Amino acid sequence: MLTKRVFLAIPINPVEPVVEKMTRLKNRLADYRIKWVNRENLHLTLFFFGEIPLNQIPELRKLLRSTTHNLPSFSFSLTGPGIFKKGKEPKVLWLGIKAPDLLFDIKKEVDRTVASMGYIPDEKTFRPHLTLGRFMPRQEVHPDLENALKEMQTDESIEYTASELILFESKLSPEGAQYFPIEVFPLSKEN
Image (cartoon, rainbow, N blue to C red; front, side):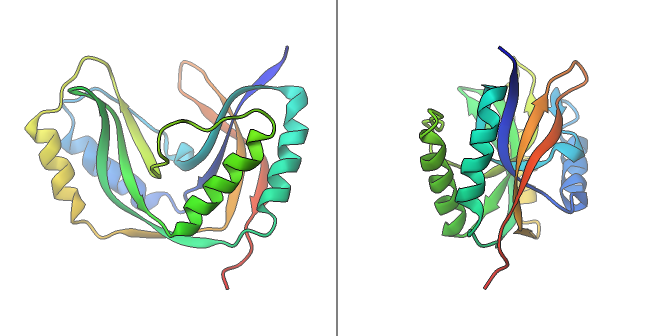
């Protein structure tokens, strides 16, 4: 059965302010082995579907179109960096997202809609974030990492407008993932 690896996301545009923060973090965290996200892959994931059969994509597109056609655009901001970890091992380096309740409402609506096709959301609580990099295994959190994160907490937040959702195909390769838009779902203008 032919499949595509698919996810729904809010694109980040412009990426330059995020790239500037990533560059500062790369310099501060040079002793850590981190696989950094390519600038063209920066996004806020709303739902990761995984590998889905090609014959389900038209129905998924139709469902998402009907769910998103009246959703309003909204503003959000990127805040300071943080990490997800497992035990003492850092796993993911991210920028936080401060968003209105509308983002969480949109996430719930998408979850409810795609559940009708059998797609169940992650059991973890939705914590909107922008992944900057993934730590390679067998590293520990040291004070230099904690200090770098604390120092950048006071940075000015970066303001964005979510004006569309995009259903992406993700193609994996040794050089890293590449994302290709399947369909763009515009959000209506803010009131």
